Length: 178
Length: 80
Image 1 (cartoon, rainbow over the protein chains, first blue to last red):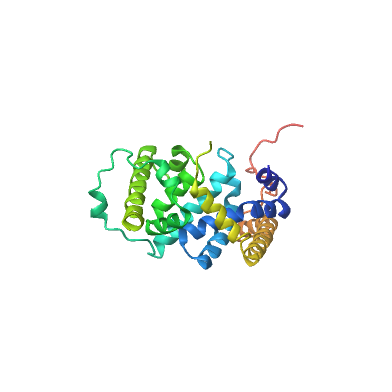
Image 2: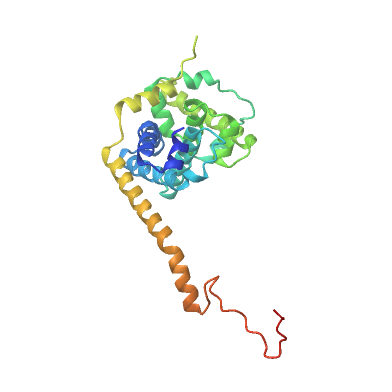
């Protein structure tokens, strides 16, 4: 495995391979979460520096990609929050939504057209965007998501339910009312 | 039949459009790594020496170089 080879030999070549393999995906995630290409370039560099510094802590308990994407999501969420750049949603309106049951089918989200997906995801707060990407783009389990977000599995399940519901409401408002 | 997943299709589209992140990012990263490595090597090389100097400045002695403990004058020396 490239990571263990790099840790063992410290050869730049192994790191270059890791970078070439994963940078396009990390960059795509940064663009989706930060909604700005220049900002995404800075983020990409910072994320890989974090990876270099923390690589020795990577215990190979999870897949390298899961670990790397977890750093990516947490970094981007922190950045958006730090710069107060997040989408502000009227919380009271969402609190009134009774989201006890999973009323929004996965199929509804997965089959949303790409150009609509971009718009709706752009309207969601960064944490909801990250959760939906983890679940539907990276196929992460609830357990993996909970671990990377440092929350309980039940909290993550509820947050995903709410994110899906917000997605459906925004999508219907923007694309179904025409 | 495999279920349609436009989240993945969207990611693929993004990767296609930005095939490789800008070259600058990779180059900067490699420079930073070179710096980290140099810093790490210097640290590894000089830290033990710095530690020795600090110990000497404070008035201590290096382990293994301590003078033999003096015995009080009335100590009965063991017969050889």
